Length: 426
Ligand code: AOS
Ligand code: ZN
Ligand code: ZN
Ligand code: ZN
Image (cartoon, rainbow, N blue to C red):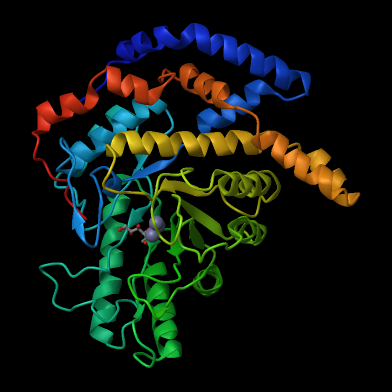
């Protein structure tokens, strides 16, 4: 399945006059206020977000899984789906693989498919939260933290395998998310579990190629409900520091207890040069993995405000790896991902409109009202014409979801793959 660029242009015809009107209005408004429109549009176009291979099929919950017709059933088809997203939005230029769900049979063939879509391989994710059929040891009571040395060694070896697989594809980072923890008080010794995790991570870190990064993800609870070994950003940050310069904290928006000030966490990590990666999603309660921007768009904007500040003022922090980590079972996964991509771009564009100089001045003058006015003025601006322009400039669709629907992409995928295809993996 491949979208002809001309077909995307055809779908744009219907909206171009309206787009021009909106864009002209917004750009004269913003230019009048002194903004450099071209530079904002360039930044939006350059902002690429990786799509996780496991979000391309309809997800599920621990209670069940409902598949969506035409799901990709192998790695090549997953990359094709990211190709569709990238062709329409021009902002999904990477895929993040999960091993062992996505082990390539033929590396060159897989690289060629990705290349043909202009898609690169972002962070590779290891999996020590499920037992594989061929596995000798079980992760039921933990992996890198396990009290048993043989189990830890199996988990370390798996992570090293994942690095080797990613290296053959051109990935430059490994993301480790552990389910390790306990369900009941007294079940494990906290200090032993943390020490084991630290030593295991150091062993993995020792096998990283020079130009690679290790991302350590944290999460307060789930699947364990009493304790999680890497429960918060502080624990992740500490482990990253113990490992070394190539190890970083990864922030997943859903991995915080309700009302946590995530923007402040982001800001602290960037100041310390340790924000390595980012998983976008949204949540009402916990790690809900809902569509980005569907629940708390203002919080997302405030987070982006800190990300933009950090990208402009913290050269000690490398450019973070962006990924969507969302999946559920009610929408067409590709339409859902387009909604997430749009929400990310929108929050980013609004954050780029925050006048950092005026904000600094208002802060120094303790003008609290002015500070809020500056943020909210940016947030209330309808930036969608800027996003459209960024896509248009790169050959994408003015309205990706409308184009996806009018080009009958899902129908074609069902025709190619069958109505009962099931995504491999989760
Ligand atoms: C799990 O909660 C984490 O968010 C992981 O980043 C990711 O969702 C998982 O590795 C995919 O199964
Ligand atoms: Zn995540
Ligand atoms: Zn998660
Ligand atoms: Zn999540």
